[in-house]
Length: 374
Image (spheres, rainbow, N blue to C red):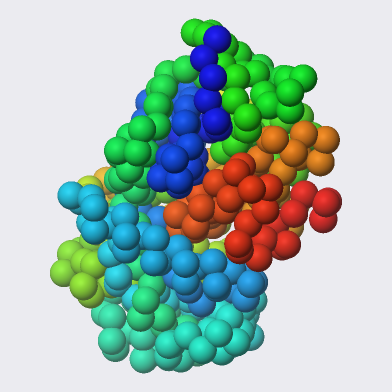
């Protein structure tokens, strides 16, 4: 039996950040990951994730985003590969559309720098865009993308530097509370005890915490990369990341980075709830929905397919995060249900989860993410 201060279950985007923050505060930390570190089986892969401050989901995220940017800058300064790339961010759709209205509300409420452009003006500035002239776009200069796998690497390296122990390919089989108010965690390799446990297991969270079965639901997501006809229009210095709300749904995309092609995804794709251990590979139907959108709104990017990938969202009922301690087991902290928009905040979520594991409360306002709202 090996004893630790805190065990972190799941060392992806959220778990790696949590392990780093805990170790930096002098905690004796064990991280347990069922796959490799990093890996492509869950939600923290695919090279890029959008980061933005004008948050249409809710204005209460903005102070957390301000802190997340500070933490990414600190992590970037200590890492050999650039993590945060600023390209500007475009949130666009018809006048009055939900995403545009939400982005404007957050920007105005928090005094964030932004511009409002028509679809026509956007296309003049960024020739890769071909949105309808009557569309409205919120353009945020601080937006961009994170290099997702390298963010995980950077957080794990930081955890290692401060003495954390990370075990890849060692999945958790079970856990139980101990008589002294801690936890015992069982894997196929060993048994471990700790004062606290943080569960950041993504799509597998409900396997360990059955009370999350309806609160953290895995969903299959598909991403596509297409070869642009004019590659110069889809580079990080000429093509902002985007979120576009249109009659086909709402989509997000990126400039070329890391692999050939402009990258695009549709939020919630086909709304397929899945077993995280049985996620189907991309199909021609998956490709078609991404290509149809690209042909209509970004036609210069609709060349041959370069790559298709699946990943997973883990959705909460209201699509806000779940960050809390368990009511019956306050030594167990959960970070789950990030609903396809959490990675950008993983740097500060790790800080919050470390707060809860050590002090049972956080310096940040996390009322929006409490379990009791369900």
